[in-house]
Length: 136
Image (cartoon, rainbow, N blue to C red; front, top):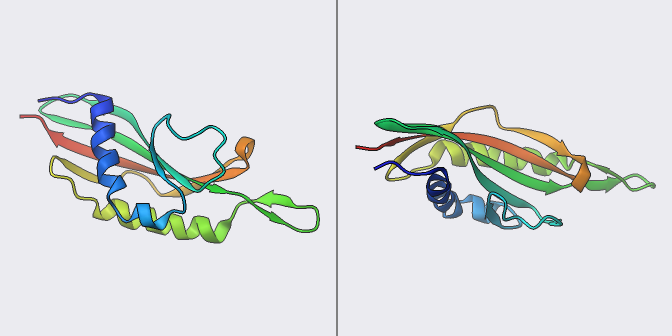
């Protein structure tokens, strides 16, 4: 039986929410669109990106981990918390490579990397996870 994007997001969210990521980050894990807009915490967001139907459903789920910027210097300039981002990049890659789900084969799709989000004074680590799910 085929699943919708939100059903797949829910399934993979459940797998990630029970992984070691929950203990690794300082904040919470959210489904796409559920993280508070003014959050200043270190949180992960799991979002369904795209999928193809067939006897094997395939697609991509995105995991972004938000890390608040840190102040440096006497003027308090905000910059990327590189040590923390480095630690979380390694952690999410290791977690992604080890994810197990009964219905899904899940594996990393890209190089895990950090991007700026200057409008919220944070950076986010992005991990794209490919999935395959047999529908018959």
